Image (cartoon, rainbow, N blue to C red):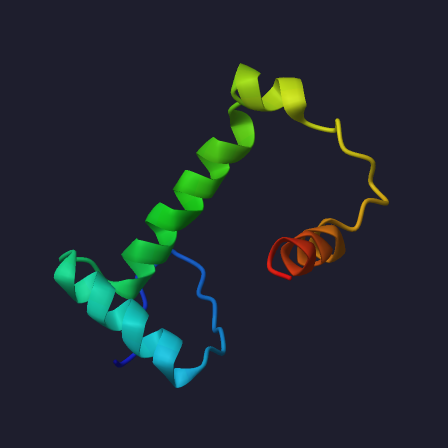
Length: 84
């Protein structure tokens, strides 16, 4: 897809694996958007998400697990015991 520059807007060049670029192009095409418009919409969603507080139920449980807890190792050990 050739680069399209909209006058007055800054440009950004990014490197992506071909498979990801092709996915973005196809997804944008199906949504009747350009890849630039798709990225702009995604950026806006991220910006909104950053400004919204956590849902109260999620905020209530955030931080209750110790930071040093090795969840993956514990879960793996649980699975080994369960399926012996």
